[in-house]
Image (cartoon, rainbow, N blue to C red; front, top):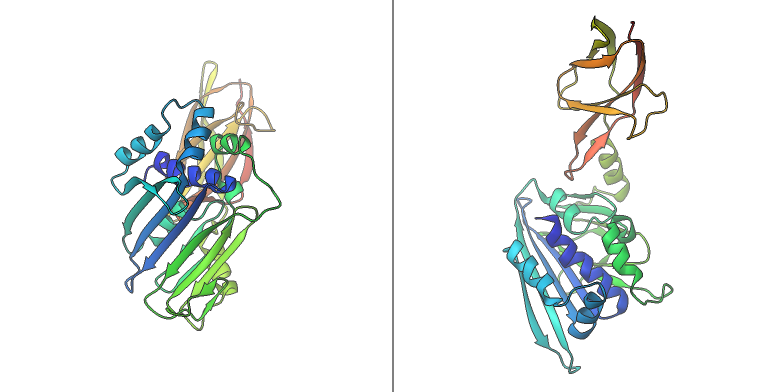
Length: 311
């Protein structure tokens, strides 16, 4: 799902929940084969929504919702009137998740500030909304009026195909397969639920730690291949590792920064770097990285080496 849609649907919801003008319910129904159905229902008071986004420069705030619905075929919205006499925008998003993509999709939907680990029988993650909010969302939040001492929550429901045997949430009395978490907007919330009697939160944390581990690369050699005029060519050889990529950073400055360094990304263990200045000392830093279970890149610790390009 495109990021612009998730910012509009989820982050606008977060902003409005803080004002007390919105309610939100996220649901993941996990099938026995590891596939799932995700639904998101948000109700935002129209007057508060319109006022907030007019203050942010939108002449017609409903255009935000129209744009999101056009971008995402899984999203729909309606204007409804509730028993309190007020009008609300009701935003509904539905998405089917294929087996093997559950962790990645849940991380996109729920894992604000953290990866979510999910299988057909277990869900675990640490949700921290403030850590996952983009600058534009924080800017919108700064314009809101809310009491930081109040408790603001989003309801998150997970339903398995078997009874839940252990959870940090509340297991439904009428449906033992279903568990509800109240995700706090003010602090981190640990979500854990499993239908496996042999599974624990600590075991899942250890599993996640192993899945996120990437071994440091080993530099076999760093040599000058040739010097032509005022330019030199260097060959960096690394020990080959299966299923990973290499990030190579190099600079004439020992203290490398984004502005004074150059980068190369490759799967090949032998890298040729050209057009280095003769007479200069170059510092190299190499990390390995891979895409983890949640679809995010995780990196190893770096190894360093330097070389002087002769004149």
